[in-house]
Amino acid sequence: MDKFYITTPIYYTNAKPHIGHAYTTVACDVLARWNRLQGKETFFLTGTDEHGAKIEKKAKEEGREPQEFVDEIAAVFVDLWKRLNISNDGFIRTTSPQHKAAVRKVLQTLYDNGSIYKGTYKGLYCVGCEQFKSENELVDGKCPDHNAVPEEMEEECYLMKMNKWQNTLIEKIKSDEFKIQPERYKKEILSFLESQKLEDVSISRKNLAWGIPLPFDNEHTTYVWIDAFLNYLTGLGWDGDLKNVPAMWPAEVEMLGKDILRVHATIWAATLLNLGIELPKSFFIHGHILSGGKKMSKTLGNVIGIDEMLEKFGVDGTRYLLMSGGTFGDDLDLTMERMTEKYNNDLANGLGNLVSRVIKLGEKVDIGTMDILKITENDKRYPKIDQSILLIDKFEIDGAIQHIWDLVRGDNRFIEDNKPWELAKSDEEKFNEVMSKLLSDLSVIAHLLKPFMPETSEKIRTALETRKAEPLFQRIK
Ligand code: ME8
Image (cartoon, rainbow, N blue to C red; front, side, top):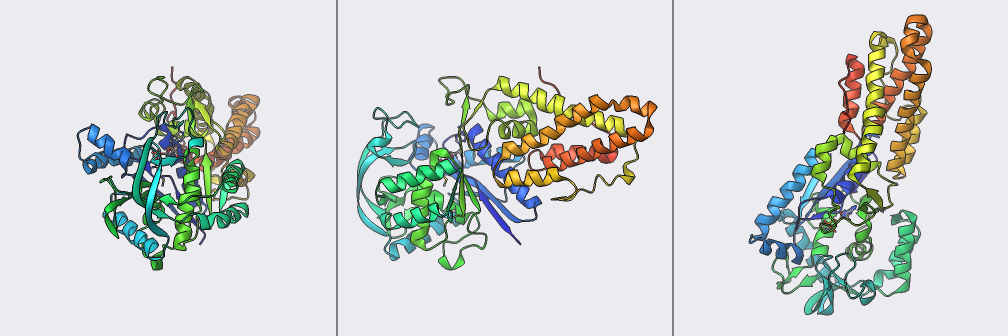
């Protein structure tokens, strides 16, 4: 059986989840659900990144023990994914004993095979990024992502060899053996790799207690990114032993926000190469959510809360609005006003209206003979289904939604043009013909909606089976 292993980044537990985390996770959920429906053996992993300076600092500010602090925030992530109907098969926490033991085993292997050596590292460290920054990455001396001056740091540490993998990486990325999508990000990372020598990276911290102690030197803890990357393997239950690399590996796709592409394409990839483990088959990089054209910030007051969205638009409304808000891969600009308008147009008036009209008009049609409820995955009778598969397989998530709504809008127009309520009185044969098309389209729509709006899809199916429809979406004032 074909397999499909998909991962989100694991999110920092320094603060509660936000709309950006929800965006990535819903996108992966759509892809995971879709691939499960295609009959692939699917594993969908998400989780939390719980060590490092940023989290230690935050816990201290709150006067809490770090473990107790991350336990609380990790639980908020788990709860949010439940509320958003996320179908993840695993949830990995980097403070779990299994993960920590595996990370130590991996580090010992890297040390034993000569990939890690002792040295010193001097550089500018941005705690927000948990990364060293080179001068040319700074704007006015500040990290542009966190608007903060990085700390100068020089300490004894262990370093991992990077340089010998530079050409291997370039080749694998160029040939798409290690595929980076969309294409512009492949170009971006290639031009980075071709323009400068990869420096060995510091993989340990001497003065940071909140991390996994190195197995070969207790005075050091593991650099948080190395710890975090390994989640993609430990989340499958891996114990860190090279003989036991899980059968689901390599991942088909690691979904990432554009902020963390480079660190993945360099440090994560080199770690795997140093271990002799296959690289993921692909990365898909998506853009960032902006609000009113600007990065969301408390100061600007333009933060869109995920709880606020759930309250206003419900679970499927939120999933729909996140996934249809712009071309998947590009940045997208959202505002509550525009989303409310879209909710009313596409969901309350568009889909909701179609379902209630068709079910109401179809009350008296005998669908026993119509075969419409027996749609199968990849049903050749319905070219719309094939087209959707093509779009989703190319990560055109918003395109696949567009495609469903073409059908929704087309059918609403078809109803107005054909006025089946009049045909019911005047022309029974034509009426049955019109209703047969509408009922079978509705069944196709319910089917296509499964990965995007699982509950709505179920409700439409139930409505078709029982011939009764509850209103799906209430208009919002
Ligand atoms: O970077 N729009 O965690 P993180 C869209 N722990 N997506 C967004 C977003 C936005 N405005 N903001 C964040 C980390 N994201 C590390 C990752 S992986 C081994 C370790 C999403 O909590 C996007 O997927 O900062 C981004 O890559 C991720 O959240 C960063 O989450």
